[in-house]
Length: 117
Length: 115
Image 1: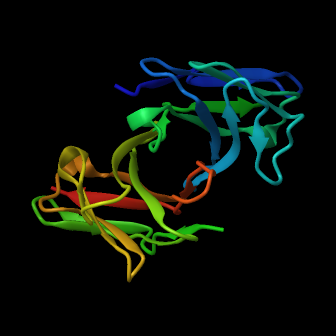
Image 2 (image 1 turned 45 degrees about the horizontal axis):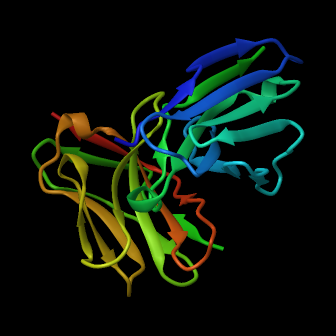
């Protein structure tokens, strides 16, 4: 149990376009989802926290107008990178936590590698 | 603010030998502590967590970790390493006593198990 999927696993886009990444909890209800960014050989940096039905809370330095996060249901959160630029190229990972015994642990998706040309 | 230190960028160990990956933390109040493992180009897999109770926590794949409050440490251990354990390991913390549920991660330690 506690499976989280991400789609797509890999995306290449042109500079100036927008890219949407989906994060789904497959076998539990994710009341909270988190979006992280990981640069090569570095740790995960939290971008934002989203609670179902509420606006996301962004970390300091993360542009909310550039990284749009929607958490419209208990099983789906989306991250849209708007007007992507090469410096947005990175590995984006989502995680989800639920209720009860799944409230204390974050379960991670497999990640999405974004390359902006 | 909380922080996590993983002092070793890489740990090398021979297959069959015991392994330890070190982690120390700083947090206001009581901590929730976690270990995750990451294989190349993959997300993080949950290994184990300390919430409360017994200081020795057992997790997946034979890993365990010991919570030491006085030393603010949560070192990951395994009695006998396997080549397949070679991966990147992350320690993470979040405060127990606040509403903030986001994790703060250490910089990661690459474990290399030689056959």
